[in-house]
Length: 127
Image 1: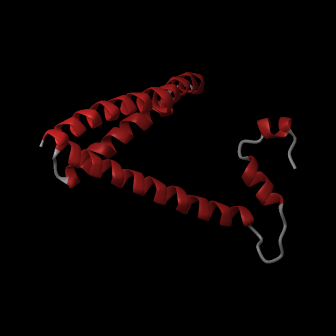
Image 2: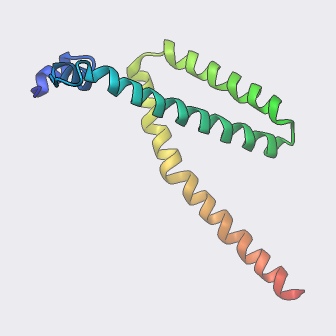
């Protein structure tokens, strides 16, 4: 196993450990791991892209093909911006974004839901 100091030095510790394991039937366990991991990542990205484009097309009421192009362009631009950013700056942003998406937005959605549910319930009772 790797010590905490070695983990800091090694760029990909999981692949490093998998390449060190010697199994007679499987000579390159790290390649098998990367194949499965790549498949999982690819299907996740595809499903998120499909969901985002469907959401955009329903929200803006545009064709699905145009929504795919729109969401793909947005992801490309954002990934290029993050590629050239420093990791420390990205880490600071992620701390603030996790606060916003983890606490503030759910509380706002709860307040909106409670407000409109009461209005909808009062409207429904009148009819």
